[in-house]
Amino acid sequence: MIVAFYLVTDPGRTTMSRAILFLFFSVSLSLPVVAQESKLAEQYFQNGEYEKAGQLFQRLYDAQSSSEYYLDRYIDCLLKLKQFADGEKVLKRELKKNPQAVKLYVSLGKLLESQERYDEAEKQYQTAIAEMPADQYQIILLGNALARDQKNDLAMEVYTKGAKLLNDEALFAEYQGNLLLQTGDFSGMINYYLIYLSANPRQQGKIQMNIQRYLPEDYLDELQAQLYSRINEHPDDVAMIELLTWSFLQKKDYRNALRQSKALDVKLEENGSRIFHLGQIAANERDFEAAIESFQYLIEAKGPGSVYYYEANKQLLNAKRQRLVQSPAYSREDLLSLEAEYEQFLTGDNRNRLIAPLIMEQAELEALYLQDMPKAIQLLEEVVNMPGMEQDLQSQAKLQLGDYYLMVGEIWDATLLYSQVDKIYKDDALGHEARYRNARLSYFNGDFQWAQAQFDVLKSSTSKLIANDALDLSVFIMDNLGLDTSTLAMEAFADAEMLVFQNRHSEALTILDSLVSRFPFHSLEDDVLFLKSRMYIKDREWQKAITVLKRIVDEFPDEIRADNALFELGSLYEGPVADPTLAMSMFERIFTDYSGSTFAVEARKRYRTLRGDKLQ
Image 1 (cartoon, one colour):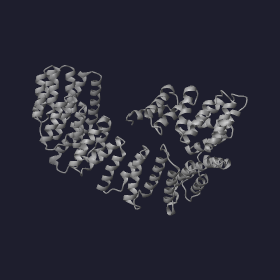
Image 2 (cartoon, rainbow, N blue to C red; image 1 turned 90 degrees about the vertical axis):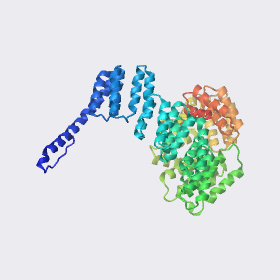
Image 3 (tube, helix red, strand yellow; image 1 turned 180 degrees about the vertical axis):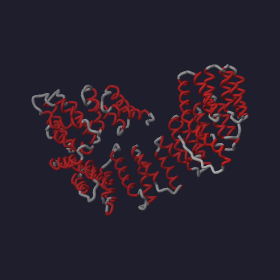
Image 4 (cartoon, one colour; image 1 turned 45 degrees about the horizontal axis):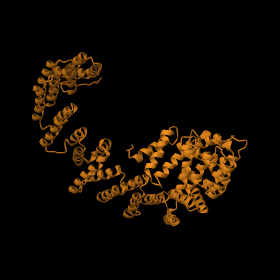
């Protein structure tokens, strides 16, 4: 309840003051009643009790004649009850009281249509348009009323005339665009959306959302054509250039998106933020050329004083490394050239804890590609011992360093580092990762039961990757342990896996070939083939990898490596072998023939991407 106090000093005005105070209290007290009656009326209407609803809506409208909603609902009730004469009488009375409320002609036309008096109804619609005042609010009400009744041509006529009356082509352009969207006229929709956006640049997010949600992908070229036309006429229209850039991003055309972004960066004298974010998007989408060009632009155009200078250098090196290692072929000279770029940037004052992730990247380059393990270990030891190092990053460096110790045979140093991280992050993803690596080390050493116990615990890890890897090894050990009177075959296989981890591939192949001859028809045969495929992939021998993976799919379709083999085949065809049709075939087989596989969701996603589906 609202309470008000009036100080009355003139006795002659006491009666009037009391009347005002009474009216104030009456209105205040009636508001909850109105709300209750409105809710009850709506409930009656939804339940089909139109007579009760009509009585309430009539009373509510009589009390609040400014409410168009109550009048509309009252007329709806009369229509449902087929009380056409009453409805016609009410509408004509209201039009006489307020002739500018031209939307009422639509209600009257709708009522006449319900009686199959179509010519009379059409006359009402035309009268509405003819009598339409130069009033933006009334024009919108009229247009929306016609559009709700699917009279899109008449609604378009209303907005077109309204724009002329008010001498502003953009005033109703959004409504016009929405109408053409409903009729499937996408070229027209684009035209009106661009008119609207040009006048309302702050609404770009809304227009982009509508285009992304409703515009068919094959109309993006039409969007770009109209944008180019407008930009040629109005080269300073920033909203059009931004929308053109966005349209290139939708098509994953990052080079053209970058060209437009550079133009905006110069025109608006920006700090390079849009270029930096574009480079990150391109890198994530593996368009490394566009990413590299973006980061090089920031370094050269903005210079060392830019807030993005150091981060752009980091991202540039990362993109160059990704481009190199993900390419079908590279030479040692290419690797050494990239190493030199790391060395050039990681000098002097740059060599600090803020740049530690880049040093870790160089360590990976040295260990996994240049096979320089001493240098890789030296780089990581430097990161681990840096003053003021953030604990998470230091722990990640310890895990990486532990792997490299393991690769050179320093098993005790490796397990010590894994255990240190595990102790710090007991219930965290980093701790789970450390525990997984320690369990894997136990597996390499032949301590299968202890390793399996750890893997079983890690199957519930919050990290999906760790959980999947743990599940894979747990099932593998369970399937193969104890099938024979000894664990010799498993021990030999674990030794071979350790050698593969250490990049000693020729020794691993010798053990695997010996295992197959010593234990013919052993359940490990598909695992032997899969491990060989991993070596061939690491050595970039794609066809050898494909050959053994196909053997798994053809000869061991019911074994646990069948879905792994299909996924690897799909990845090879998708990537270095570059055969999208075969890639789609492999991924499709996973989610159809192996629907319970941990790869099923990712396989479906990649299949749809290759098919050209627009994923959200």
